[in-house]
Length: 483
Image 1 (cartoon, one colour):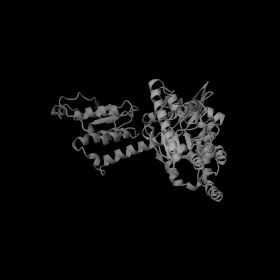
Image 2 (tube, helix red, strand yellow):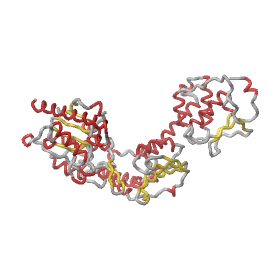
Image 3 (spheres, helix red, strand yellow):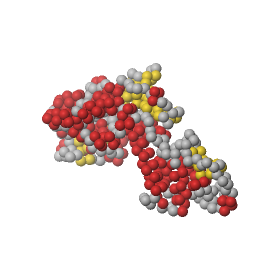
Image 4 (cartoon, helix red, strand yellow):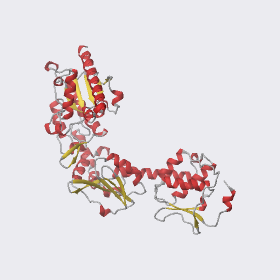
């Protein structure tokens, strides 16, 4: 570092006022310049936009220009990752801590490996607290419906401990891309209109709605999945601290559910219903059971279970083929039959093209209820989650055990997971057999609805691949039947 710059020092500290409390890029630029100007940590005063910070009593000066020939600043990837998290902490001293560590890293690049160092431990503690706060926000934000004319808007209130709103924005945009929503907090707000995300000023609890009609449905679902046999109060409170309960509609049920847990467990043991029990012994019994199933949120929507259909007796034309899709659509829900909508009609055309008679196959879905989000009078399809597919796997496995196909064709990733119990890539899994535990074979292809979303050359290419998969299934099924 240049000696002339040291000679220029005057009493008082250099002041850096952050533009935003979580702006890592701005902090990094200012910190890098100060290191290159040889400004030690004890001569820098940091403050966030609110004015909070480790301000010095003496005069404060602006940083001069970086001297020519200043050496580049070194920082490990581990430090950058920890610093990006720690800067979101609410501790006013976080900026000084980060700069002090950056300054020390120039002389000791392996400083972060010293777990006994007080600054390193503090950095890790700040980053850990921020990550935990991010996780809690994702887990405990609850949206309430607000009617705005003919449109729906969902509003949530959350009280983060740290400056995590921007860090979590991408998650909520991806998770609720089809909703119009706002998240209000004392530290700022986010607003998504389906196309664009905007930031807003801090809000108050009174700005958010207190509840909506769907909360009764949510409370009903929460009570239905509460398993007293697995209740561990200490673990529950650690994962879901009481301070978050006030914004969660289901939290009002917890004291009563906990109080009655022992009695409910005894009743469930006596009734033999601690799990889903034995599978029904007939397709008719499965049909009846799925209409009563409320093991996941999809079963609580305004819909109807759709049972598989088709022959399962070789004497009555069963080919040995079982076709599994994702879930019923809007038209299937209304008709009570699988694959009668646009995707089903496209499937019929492709099956006919390669010479497979759909009437000889047993056709069903991995998920038995239609998952949707209401948009005015329309019900828009939503993909089931992995957990919802895994719960419904109980039923589709029951169908397979009774139908006893020689070959199962899974169309789409959800159907493949319903058969295998794990997520697979369609592009990697298609075109080859996958052995199932009962001796049958699983073949994987795309879902017909995927083809409907394409046009032009892309649709032509995927249609060709789809036909090739169906033709391979037809030829392999003939070999299995002969064997």
